[in-house]
Image (cartoon, rainbow, N blue to C red):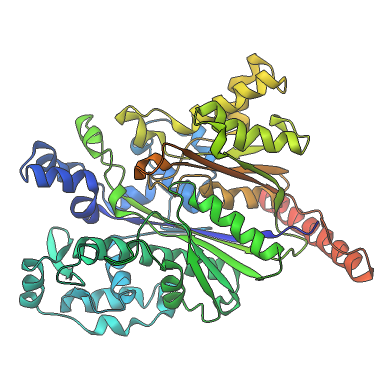
Length: 513
């Protein structure tokens, strides 16, 4: 069987303290009830600087600055144990400051709905002209700026304010006078999702060393709804993102499945490539402003910085089998079916043990599991516990029940086959996909053989069903599965093996140095 491969990945974070205050659902709801609430009054004292966000260990794990398992060695609380040597850019992407992101939002605005003042526009254009991936975009939109008077008029007429260091630098207009689905709040929410996804996609182009002209199809998997009063959520984020990034030869569509959407997206991408319909499919998602500061009240009450100040984005390139890159085992797929029931045990059985049984694999033959990788420092203060650890313990318990491991091996299983949570609480972002980049690298280095990526979602949130959702797939070392055994096929296998040996030798030399 010919399997598609994970060709490359990219991850981006955007530090968004001002968007947290103005757009996060927790903050907007509190403001609607009482603009002078005790929480809002204290909030500014608990916001992090950009430098603090860059040096925060889980953020570095997200962009590839460190491996997630290195978090085991860093004392908690992680926000008090910064990585002094951390950089904004890392092997899988970057952490972008909010001012540059506002400039990117303007670049991604196709309807002149974003207004920026002259001083900010000039300064941010200079910064972005030096950016390693944004500089390739058309920056001329930043040459069109607005007066402070025009910006204030828009804000007075229902516009959303854009601030940096408590100073108004621009705004976002509503896109329709009466359509609530096109009000300024939702327009900013959608532009944020679009712009952050563009950032991840541009990093993917650089990391994969591929021209975006080679992308055939884009699947967008965020939790946002793009549309108007007649088709709220109709889409299409995918083509909007591809247009800005420069995917001239691609088409695309959006997939929505709450937190599980990215896993669904990657399986759809793998199916399209395996079927021969497209050669290169990108799965992408931008950040969700609504989730910023979601647990902020609990963080403030406990004297912590508000850690949910990061928008998350990712891009994954799924391509035809090249004989080298890790494969997506499309024959090892787990799914939580409608008739299975929604107990946690039923969900884990459907997405973990059932596919392993069909492939005659034991639970401990999966080297790493990536489930719901929420950073526990964000969720524990709110009473939600350590979500990844809870999932790993449940998988281990099923392993004991099946006889794959012994009861006294549960804790070691959790540590050896799991990892600390390191993703921002952005809903769709933590569910499985943050580890794919690390996973592919570890497989290529020969550190692991295979990993299971799990997407889980809470469908009851839409009040349409009480069902949960879950889907999984396995990423595995490429050993030339399904390659033709004619002369050309054998030559390709020999070449792939030689390339792997060279890569392993290089990694060994680097470690020795």
